[in-house]
Length: 267
Image (cartoon, rainbow, N blue to C red):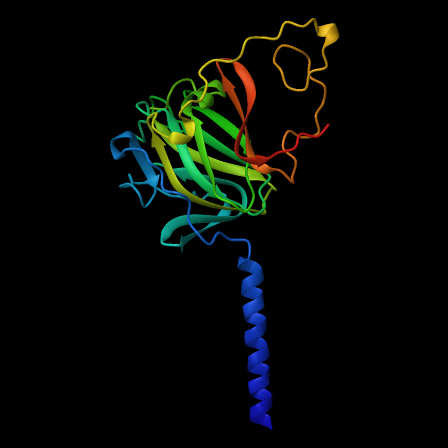
């Protein structure tokens, strides 16, 4: 009788452990992202199984507010960041990385709960020192797709428009952050810089459209640099099946929708 009770208790505990593991890991990718297709000669890779990676000092700085686990999913080695407020990835000093020959930063992300995802590039400038008076940085925010891989390709010119003074020649830090604060989870793979070779960006406009010519008194605008915009609740509802990035092209702020099935804009 004692043996049977112990066995029954062991079975219950094993079943509990299984359901606990399933619950904790239910919102995780089961496959890796598609491989990037850039020619290796056009790539400076930091974290990818596809290319030879350049050395990285750390994928989680001591001042980060997040945790890091190296995981392998479907044969893909990647980074799992949890409890994310912000996190720093630092490239090797004292010379840091020169990405002036590149045009874009690429990374693949998968998140079950982040409603905002930000990428910041920090250049320490000619003195190669933090706080030396010549540091510059630029940050881009986006709305990620949930529970599916999203390929993120951001032109370095967008970071320059957001604060970097030039294409980084002394790139010291890549800082990732987002919402919800302190509880975000994100898988990161294929973190790299590339030349103008990513199919996702092929055919992207280089200029904005012609300005509309209606008189402002005859217009109710939702998204335009030409008129005063009326408030919009969201340009990507939570029930949308798409990803949204705010981009600026030729001085025009606009919306870039990718991976579109359908998307909602709500007033």
